[in-house]
Structure formats: C-alpha cells, structure tokens
Image (cartoon, rainbow, N blue to C red; front, side):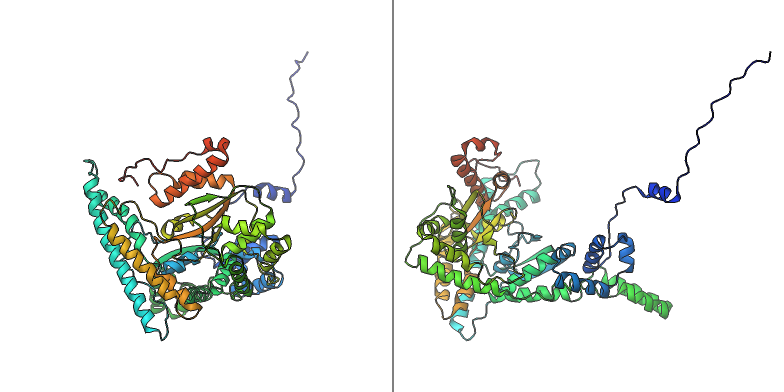
Length: 535
C-alpha cells in the first residue's frame, strides 16, 4: 500500500486590493512639517484654503501668488466678514524709540506677544526721551525739559547711592564671581532707581501679533487722544503695508550681484527670488482707521463720570481691594464703564451706581453701545461677570509687570498725580529719601502746572513728566485659576518687591473672603526676608 502523504492545506487567496485602496493605505500617515519663507498673507490664504479646497499646504503655496492672496482676502475678509482668516497671518515688528507711556498703550492688548526693554537690567539714563509738542508755549516746553532732566539726574543719583549701599550690606559669597555679584546688585539698584524714570523715557520693544490683533491695535492707537500714540498707529500701519526688513537682505543682494556678474540672465531670475520686496500684511490692515465708536463713547462716558462724581473727593484706598459681593451684571457693567474715565476707586463708583435708579444705570450702559458700528467689537469694559475683581493702586513701574497677565480683563485709568507716589524699598536704607522725595514732588508739581495749561492737549502732554513711582489705578477681573497663578508667580522671592507685595495682598484678600481656598495657593510671604543675590 502506498503510504499516504500529508498534503499541506491550500493557502487562502486574498481578494485583490484596488489601487485606490493601496494609495490610501500608503498615505494614511499623519505628516507634520514646518513652513518657512511664505509671506504672512500668502500663508494665511493657504491655510484658509483647507476649508475650501482639497489641496495640500505644499500644493496651495506653490500655486498662490501675492496677487491671488490679496484678491481672496478682499473677498472673504472684507466682503464676507471671515475675520478669523487674519488670525492665520502672524507678523513680527520692532518698535524702537517710543516713550514708556506709548509702550504701555501699545501693549494693552489681550492677544499680544512681545518683549520690552527691561528697566531692571538696563540703564535708561542715555536712552533719550519723547518731547511733546507745546506749540508756541515756550514756558511749558522749558518746564517740561527741566523736569525730565531733573528726573534723570535723580535716577542716576539714586542708583549710585543704592548700589553702593547694597554692596555694603550684602557680602559677596566666595564661590560667586565679582561680575555676577555686581550685575545682580545693579539689577536690585535699578529696581529702586526706575521709580524716577519719567513716562517720557524712550524704550524699545518687539511684538509678534496676528493680523486681526494688529488691525484692532492700529485702530485703537489711531483713536487715542495722545498725539504720539496716534503717530505710532500710523507708523505701525505703514510698516505692515510697506516693505519688511529682511535680516538676510544685504547678503542676498550681494549674492544676486555675483550671479548677475557671471550670467546676467540668471541674475535677473535670481533677483526675483533673492531681492524681492515682502509686504507682511498690506491687505489686512489697509482699512484700519480711527474708531468713531471708541472716540465718541469715551467722550460721553467721561462726561457721565464727571456728572456722577463731580463733587466727590477721591477716597483713600488700599493697595489691593478685592470687591466682595455678587453685584448684578448691570451694576458691574455700569461701574466698569465709568471706572476708566475717572480716578475714583471701583468701590466708590459702585456705591454711587448702586444708588441710581434702574433706568439711570441702563442709560450708562447704553452709552457704551450707542455708537457701536456693524463691525465694531464691544469695548473691553463689557467683558464682565467675573467673580474676582481686584482694584489695584500701585506704582506705574510695578503695574507694567502686572500688565503682562493677559488671561484676565484689565481696565486702566488715566495717568495722574492724584494718588501720590510710592517709596521703594532701599531708598530709606541708602539715605537718599530726601533726594527721592524732592525729585518726586517737583515732578508732580510740574505735572499740575503743565496740565493746567490751555486745551485738552496740555493735560495729555503733562502725563509724560510723571515718574514710574507715581501711583495709578487699574482694575483686574479674573477667575480663580488666574488669581492663583498671579499670586504664586509674582510673589516669588526673585521678583520685584513692588509686584511681590501686590501678589501677596491678592492672596490675602482671597484668603479673607474664601478661606477654604487659601491652602491651594503656593505663595511666598512678601514680609519674609529674601536673598538679594538670588534672581
């Protein structure tokens, strides 16, 4: 008998896979790549095409020209109102030789990224300063110059004395290098001396914003009552519309010339790529203009605040006042709308607003809406309803650090000498309080004299002589997470003593009103001594 042999099982036949499915399998992997070299508006167009085309990013960018991008943006951005497209175009700017006053106004955007020259790490004595136009009023111009020069002299004198005092008080550790030791103490001395820097002091900053924020920023600047700020808006618009500066421009131009010397025809082709002008956002900002809504509303709210508080002296207020109680939304809105147009505290204004009839409160709210156009965003004051409302009265220099916290709603009051000035730590210890007080008081007296001149422009120009040590008020509205974040971050020992105190008082205010939540704050007691050599 023939032995039986085991036959292997037949292999199962797989169904044929269509070619399209094979392609799908091969392409079913996420691809991520960075994009470099596309103009901001062209890139915004390419990204917006994802919602209207099946093309990939590379395919879109290869077929788009700046003319096509402009045509697309004119249609969808301006005619159809798809403003989110402008969120996709990001532009970097350098803004140099603007006053500290203008810088505060410029960066007052909730959607803003940037950095400014630090008054902690740089000597501002030689930075120069902004001179307002006093027209034919030579006396005011002379007083302004003398006051600013006196402030810079005081700034230098206080720095030198505080620096010398710190070197006597703080011994250099053996393991620390001499230059690091002196650099650290200089920063501490600048922390003190900066209180005498006038708002006229020149600074510089860099910002990276999307085109939508840029458009609203330019409009807000153009709507300002301050001449320098309006000019800044014009220059920002011109920079976005004109040719951008290319960091490699000189090198690329030299390369193009070398190519042209070897082959003129090739050099002409190279010029189109290597030396072409790039305009970052000419289409998206071309219609940015002063906002009648902001201008007219500000004027009417100023009048309403003056009528309500005309005979009211500004009441004393603490450094940090956490407004307790659950006000109606109408009371909060009306109070906040008036807050930015006077120098009274939120608590004081709220008391008067709460006493008004419902009809009168609604009239104040209506003032904030009356002139709103079809495309106008609501005023920031309408971002209401937060549980934690901190009314903070602090020096302008310290406020500039607090101003960076953009997850909360901030409403700023105008600069004034009405709240006096702060005396920083280190001034009494260095024995320079007489110099400090004399310089501060002279500057505030000059502010009063200049502001009393004829016309509204006199009051605007007078603000520039106010030193950073001047106390000013700002309202911060936030949720619990932001209050915890600011308190923890800003109370850290390496921070400036001004905002460390504010952060600590914010925590203490929450602790008093919400004791069950206090244990979750990881804060540092501002009264505890700190190591001045730790940054």
